[in-house]
Image 1: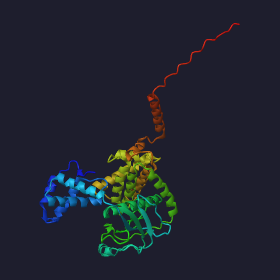
Image 2 (image 1 turned 90 degrees about the vertical axis):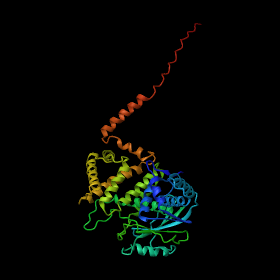
Image 3 (image 1 turned 120 degrees about the vertical axis):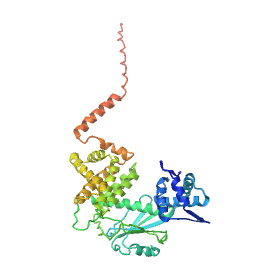
Image 4 (image 1 turned 60 degrees about the vertical axis):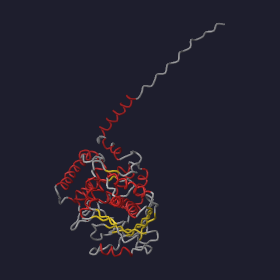
Length: 426
């Protein structure tokens, strides 16, 4: 592992400004003009290519520590900075893991049969109320201050994730990824059973199962790590908790899902796509949800911004592909107007549900693809086949002829010579 600068990024002018504003007083380092400093620091962070095993939440600490170290030792060259980041990366990777508990809530109405399997080295457990084992007292002032004018939910189900990590941020990231994966699975199962939802007043998120407003991190004895909380800045008010009455049917779906995910050769992509799907449908602003869903559809079709390729590949998944191609063209135009022209329509409710169904089918296509392809790109080659059955049969015949043509001819075996008949004369 070795940190490096992103290609075409010129760090020298930025570092010169940052170090020029540094004030060193013994072991203490400060930077003047806080607003400019934070702007420049955010740009600097984007220019560093960190190791993949370094969680995003830990990267700011490494960059800050490297900057402070350079200011103290007058090592201000770009090469000095990335060398120090690399050293800190190795130090972080070799740090021993510690057990943590991540405590959160979800908008589920409590049921005693709720259980989740161990996943990605993380075990989880549901609770009807806040367990006495967990001490949140250090966080209470921050919780009250953060949600001073916002009502907190009273009937959400508590969810605890037990993880082992090298630091606080890594623990939170690991636990949140597992919870969000399962929340994506819950919502995928539930959303496929519903059509378009109409709202007479304020719109609701399409997802029935939403994350709680905040989460806390605890040590193995249940005590809060410190006063920090992880919270949703967009939280406004509690939503109606979802009564998961068909939990038994969901468990059958979950068994099928985990079986396929476990066998997947591009498992990380599948997990992240499922999380992205769920987060997009948490949005109350349907225009934002449409933009995020279309971005996910681009990934699922492995087509970038090639609209024709996206539409052709996704419509292949449907029996009436010509009809669905027309709908996808309409959604493409809606998305482009929303993102480039700040366009919104009273038909956004229908549009977001139409796009949701396309994303769901493309997502399920990739989940079912376990063991058949090594990557999203390889899986999408299948979607380039002709959608018409007659053309598929013609293509199959051509492929079979091509295979026969390319196969080396088998050498002919020489026929054995017949022995001349021997006539004995007695």
